[in-house]
Amino acid sequence: MNRYGEQAMTHWKEHKPQAFGELENPEEFFTALGEEISTEIETRARELAGQEPDGEGYLQRLQRLNTSRLTAEGEVLRERVLLDVEPDQE
Image 1 (cartoon, rainbow, N blue to C red):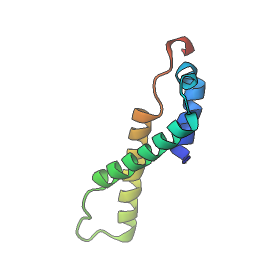
Image 2: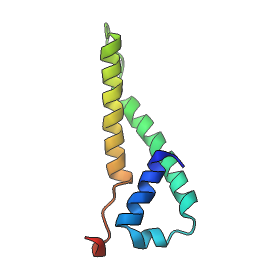
Image 3: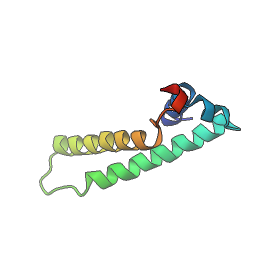
Image 4: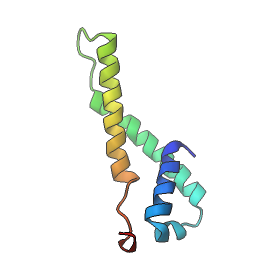
């Protein structure tokens, strides 16, 4: 299980215990979810990074790629991992 799967599992245990308890195989579920999230982050980061501008230097490229990755990661985690809490957990 990758770090995204672990993060999702921790979040569900704490904030969505009923849904977590209903999972037949949590390890399998969060392993698959982590892989999906990782792939989605990579895809979105590439889209956000766009094409390399003419004359872009190494540090500018590094900054553009890192910013794209962090932005994509934040968006996907909010959409797929940091889900709303269950009503009785508020």
